[in-house]
Amino acid sequence: MSLFKKQIVVIGSSSCTKELKQIAFKVGEEIAKHSYVLICGGKEGVMEEACKGAKKHNGLTVGIIPDMESNYGNKYLDIIIPTGINYSRNYIVQNSGNVIIMLGGSYGTLSELAYALLFEKKVIALKSKWSNISKEIIKAKKPEDAVLKAIELCKK
Image 1 (cartoon, rainbow, N blue to C red):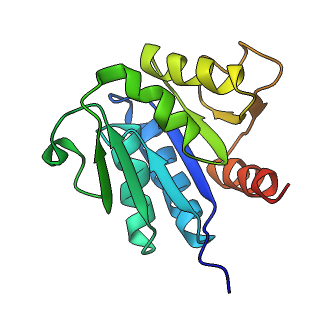
Image 2: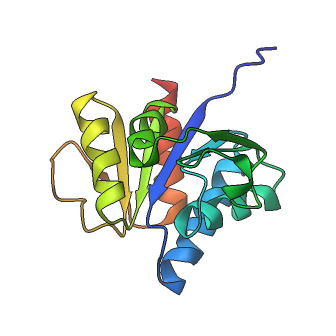
Image 3: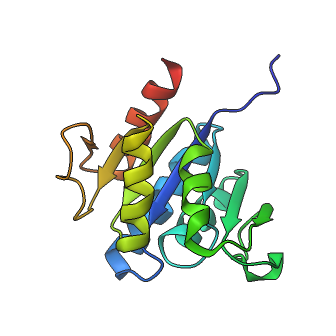
């Protein structure tokens, strides 16, 4: 039995609508149900809701936060990595998983997406205004669809 677990990164807005929060929660649930590790920026909004969903199914959550101290991460994180490098941590976030699921997003998310595309990471977009930036971005219609696509890509 391998101890290695595949990791799915969730990126998205730190402030978001109720609809996007529900989507993020469901994405987190689905990641945990399939026994994948959820990696995110560790703050509020999409990140917190995805972690909350993962914790509902005993998922493992990791937050790579921009702050110097771990107490600034959201309360649903199992592992908090404080970087103290503000938005520069976005490079680390996008590079920490096998596949990225992008939900909504503002300019911080755009920077993570830019790094991901630069380094040829697979990105699945759901309800994101950035989904048409590149033909390389895979679109999903539902949270379950996004996670299944991510899992399929992790297996390759």
